Amino acid sequence: MDIDSIECVSSVDGLEEEEISHLDNHHTNHNNNNNHHHHQIPVKQRSNVIPTAITPATSVHELLECPVCTNSMYPPIHQCHNGHTLCSTCKGRVHNRCPTCRQELGDIRCLALEKVAESLELPCRYYSLGCPEIFPYYSKLKHETVCNFRPYNCPYAGSECSIVGDIPRLVTHLRDDHKVDMHSGNTFNHRYVKSNPREVENATWMLTVFNYLGQYFCLHFEAFQLHNAPVYMAFLRFMGDETEAQNYSYSLEVGGHGRKLTWEGTPRSIRDSHRKVRDSHDGLIIQRNMALFFSGGDKKELKLRVTGRIWKEQEKSDAAPCIPNMSS
Image 1: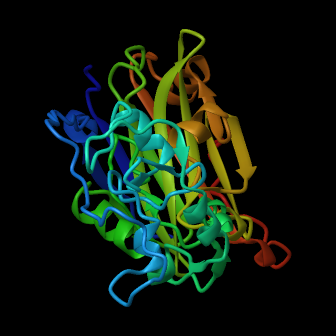
Image 2: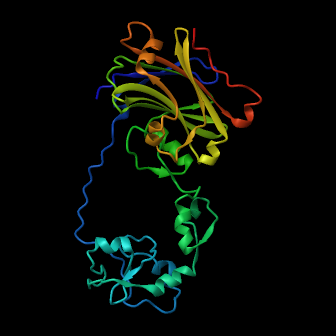
Image 3: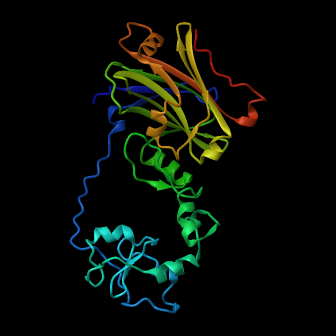
């Protein structure tokens, strides 16, 4: 797909505009072409019989580790006639054959190990990232799906990036690997230019990161098809959890020739994927005809200026959002 070029002119906290070129290949998808051929499922070797007493060399946690996927096992825990165990997910993968001794598995439950699990209390798997919680074995998994300390996915929208980590790591990753523009401050003034606004596909996008009060925000601007017609959308995501995102608000404005559109809302957490936010239309949406009207001229070139501001909610009573007037 040809995207031509999109220019971004940014001014932060009253600074002069700085032209930044975004080339067509800035949004190149990263394809994963690695093919995996499994001749044999690797298995962690164990003794043939589950010990009745736990020795110092064998922890309960190791007993509850599936030998195939190495994840913790939850009921139903299966075992073969020789006492080798594995999780219910992997039972289907090994075609009902024990991965340790190759005997037929059948439908034998390891009730003793399930009972042992009921008596355990274990730390959250994200304890190394700061979670101090300890949970009963069967509650631990549920907590980990919503733990505030679990890693974040990379918020970059131009490719299916597999990088996960905490916020500092992702900020460095966005800057160094994706070459994302980084700015400090809470105001922005961007100008987006495209030579042929009628050629729009779902991959036209831009991302800028702002550092404000020690927090990071992702400003997205993109074009995509909506009901067979191109639309342009700008929205903000917060690099943190949803509860923290609720402490902030932002406003966006686009206009020209005596008209303007404004948007005010709460930034979405990057826990919500870019596509989820976009498809919910939670942001400033500009229809193509209105975008061309704002652009002026012969309507053959898109020239949109999007301005905005981020503020913390407690500041709202102190100072109303100040956005440059785009109507002139």
